[in-house]
Length: 180
Image (cartoon, rainbow, N blue to C red):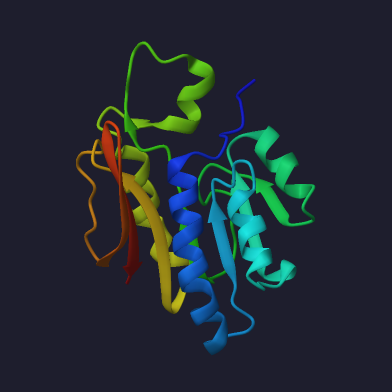
């Protein structure tokens, strides 16, 4: 069985972005509907709840059954899904802290699901980007985390804004705000 991705520098960078952005979005729309793809440990869900997002307006999914169970403990609607496979509806905000690292043949299989985004690191991200716009409400926004190690991201059809970045010892992390 695969391990749940535990919060690290990337998770905390995204937490800080959402702490800045979500209150502003909630002022305009108190019924903000948010989808998190790849909920992992539930750190972003806890953050959203603390920021005042209504529990019934948060939906999440993960490919890892352990992560789905952990997030269901927060009484959030969470399903087992490979990206948008079992997702319905449209959302004002979509959050994704994906596996973004290029493939490393020496990495154990138990952690690859949470860290490896394909040979270049971007294959899963690009698959996500092709589908995400179908699930966004008009004027909706995607918050996507990537790394300087990720190669070949295709942002076609999105207006991209760098929202935050953080240098860590071997890479730089980026949070992008994407609008269709």
